[in-house]
Structures are given as structure tokens and as C-alpha cells.
Image (cartoon, rainbow, N blue to C red):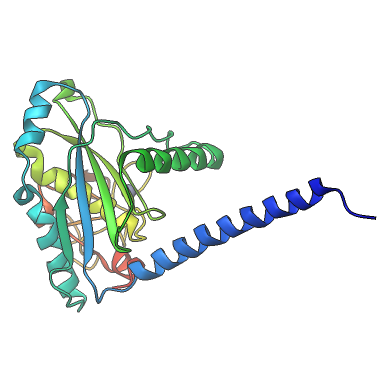
Length: 261
Ligand SMILES: [Zn+2]
């Protein structure tokens, strides 16, 4: 007796699905593996987005130039040097075109795995609609920077960096005197895409020892530098300050290990 055609079709569909899954898993594995190879420079394209739609933010974006992000490349070169990673320049920066669409907002920090998974898919779909990946190199990070106005000192939404897909989304202030601090946030999210984890406590203070610029400093407080994945300088056991720029920031030993330096 011949089997119903429906069953054959079902099997074919399952085979295709499994094939697609294998390709996605394979390319993710390949990508993560390639990111651990520091003999080649990283590429990062920064795409500005007007987060408020105001003329002031539009003007700020129009005036952005590569030099406003030069700190980032210098920071990575200097820090890599300290860990004997000698590829120079380590970061090949590009300023991409302005995008006129906001990425899907991330779920709350305490959201469950399902909400996070759905958002991650939405984000990739958004990316697929707005940017081509044709010819994209393996070690290419895409960083979307959403610029906001002064916003009555309301805090910005959180920023994030994803290892899968090498995507970062940063919420930043559209003010020239904030550029140096914006670069601290961009560097933090860039390192997340490379596999670095956060090194701060629930209250936002740096976690000892790995979140301290120098956990062996004597006296321990105030710390001179912020560890980039802690994001703040510990000035006492339970007080910390935001660094002014990447000059007050370094890559600690735990983060260096996570990114295979
Ligand atoms: Zn983080």
C-alpha cells in the first residue's frame, strides 16, 4: 500500500525546517568562533537614529562625524595592548547612514525567556527590513545609536548588546558635551556583543573584585578607573560615579578573559 502523500510532504517540511535550523546554528557557532580570533580587526558601523523626531536632534545627527567616535578605537587599541593583543587598529569604525525607524523596544529586565526570545526575533526582522546583510563581513558589529534630547533629566531607556547577530542598541543624549560619555555606553554594549558580561550589583554599584578598575589598589577607595562592564567608578563600598569618558575606564581581567584576550 502506498503511503498518503500528505505524510511525505510533512516529512519534507520537517527536513527543510531542520536544514534551516542547522544553518542558523552553524552560522551562529561560526560567528561566535570568528569573534574570538583577534588576529583580524573588528568592524563596527554606527547607525544614528533620531529618537525624538525633533529638529535639534536632527541637527546634532547631521553634524556627527567619525571623529566623535575616535575615542572608541583608541580605547580598544590601548586596552588590547595591555593584554598583548597586537592587531592595530583593532577596531575599524564606520559611520553609517541615519535610519528613520526605531528598533523594537526591549522587554523589561525581569521579563521571561519567552518575551526576550520574541523581542530578539522582532529585532532581527526589523534589521532585515532596514539593512542588507549582503556582503557583511563576519566580524562586523552593527551599533544603532538612538539620540534623545534633554528630556527634562528623565533617565534614558537601557541600552543592550547582543552576541547573537552582533547587534547593539544604545540610547544616548544628542549633546556634544555628552559624546565622551555616550562612547562609554557604546564601548560597554560593543563588549557585550563579544561575549563580555555585566559586572555590577543589583543596586548599580560595581561588583567586587571583577567590576573594579583595580581590585588590588591600596587603599581600595576611591578607585581611579571604572571597569567597562561595571560602567561606574567605585568611590566607596556603596557609592559609585559615572566616568566622564573612556579615559577613566579600562578593561579588567575578567572581561578580557571573556572576550578571549
Ligand atoms: Zn551591560
